[in-house]
Image (cartoon, rainbow, N blue to C red):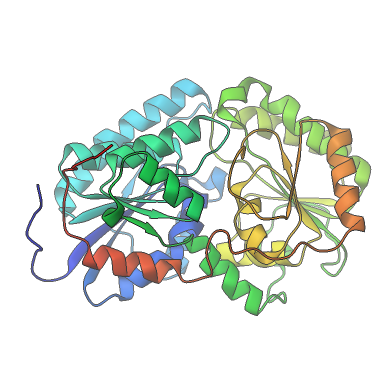
Length: 391
């Protein structure tokens, strides 16, 4: 069924469920908010509301976005059962929000388990659904979630040419699949133009641990648990901690996402910190997206398994040691060295790229104008919630 285009501004309801989702959609939020034919409805839910995971909601509000609704649906536990129940609660709560707001299009971001609730609620309520960053592959349950949302979604704003081709192979019609690039690259492009530090991370964000000269060669670490390996999350992070401890370089270390196994990762970090009290490592919960990217741009490299190493670091030309299976088979630039959960492999990889040339920046995930492309696309597409799939 194709609805007639409604008069007046289209109401675009964007659901942000976690701190990474905000950086993935921030420039699109601005473009939607400023578009003459669109009205932004911003819903913040799940771990984006929780202080223990960096309270992304504070950064959202400080950036000038008005939050239309908040959905508290995270069930504590950081295990597979908690993730499944959190998704179920999200469906219940978001259904009520959508019924009240009556959006013309709902937008969901990427592949986290909380985004599945957004997709299911919108689909069963016959609300057209747009998916940001479909078509990518990864090494855990996120890939299942991402491809499931692709089949539920009516419009697809993908971040790379490989993702574009993959969504078409999943049977989606070419006229609703758009290679917009990744909105997080928009932020990286701004940082690339003005990379110099304009803030003191220790004063602005607090955190715990030693403080050091920002002009020194420092590393950034961001390591999350892998959902299908969650029982080993503490052991995995302990290998990385041992490597960084032995290396002795100044290091900014960030807290993990709220995934199954996050409790093990967090316990490993806390135990290490209490035992060794390292003065060359400073631990943070979160940073504003632009500040975090500026920290990366001036670093010697990123260690861990965050997708920021695959996306933004590729654009910025920042070397990355990617640990484990979390980012398996993702489109990438030439900045990534893949290693296993082994301290020696991690150390050897760091030492190799410290002696080599800086990677050449890559635009595999776009050139810096994705947010505007997404807003323009949302303003123009026919409103539909029924598919005609041809295989």
